[in-house]
Length: 147
Figure 1 (cartoon, rainbow, N blue to C red):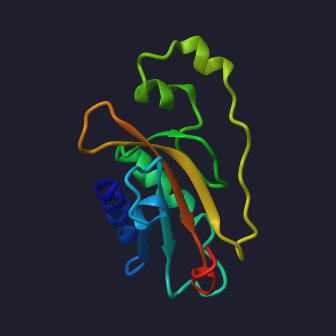
Figure 2: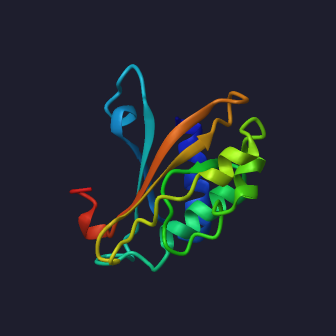
């Protein structure tokens, strides 16, 4: 969990230097097990509103570097993971017909003054073939306490 959080932090810092990236959820609460990884991102410069497509840029870079394997949500502005060929690269064991038959559910939208949320599946940097569910949330600075 901590290693995946570090990979997300590395990408976030490249796009938004000095952003605050925190691992939340069961990991933060020191639970014995962790079903998914919840990552919360804020930045002092984004007081009332997130930058347009800010979270999409983060997710795209994570995908391009091979850290994200599957998108469970699609955000406006995302450029990766919308084609069958993208997913076939991630999982060669799933039949091509299965990918063609599946269609994205839709886009999660945000007005900009609210947080942006992404759900996906991340590749474990520690264990080959292991995948972890990941939720990444980008919130304006003034909403960080409530997020």
